[in-house]
Length: 214
Image 1: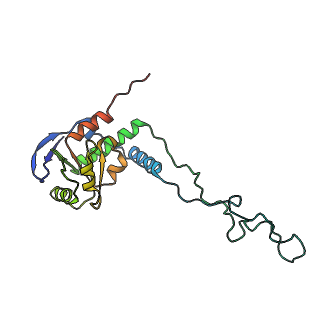
Image 2: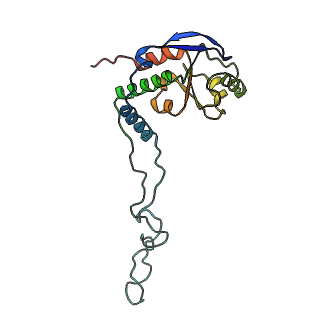
Image 3: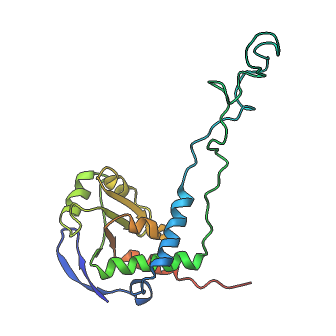
């Protein structure tokens, strides 16, 4: 598969062939769904947490004597029946949503997402990506000249680039990521994928390694 290559001015400067093992993988919706759901679950932060009657402060003294008052008997003001008391069956921080997915499935899902971007003309390839100063204006002007103008965009860098990351940080609906950290969930969260040609080699080296069994 051949794809157009742009410079930072938005001009088409040539074409390049994409590796078939990464950008020409048949789509398996079920596998892609399973991997994306697992990644969403693994990123989930469990915040909601209620206290049981054993954890609520106070309530050590019996509110009133057992008999003779004409009122219902109670042993603690921190009973779930009382305002300010413990909560029965409430959400707890101990809940575990983590899902384990095999590495090969995650790799396959990533290649499927990359293939979908390439086939639908949502991959914007640059000859190089260099930002001399950490200024939002520079990055915004560059993106405005590319096909991804005004759309949600994920920018991939071959390696950590502080200037470029700072320049893109305040641009709405735009996010940056290193090639070695690419994943199916981030790819599917943005419409366009922008990256320099050099990033393809990093993706190939990172995700197509043959692991030797010991």
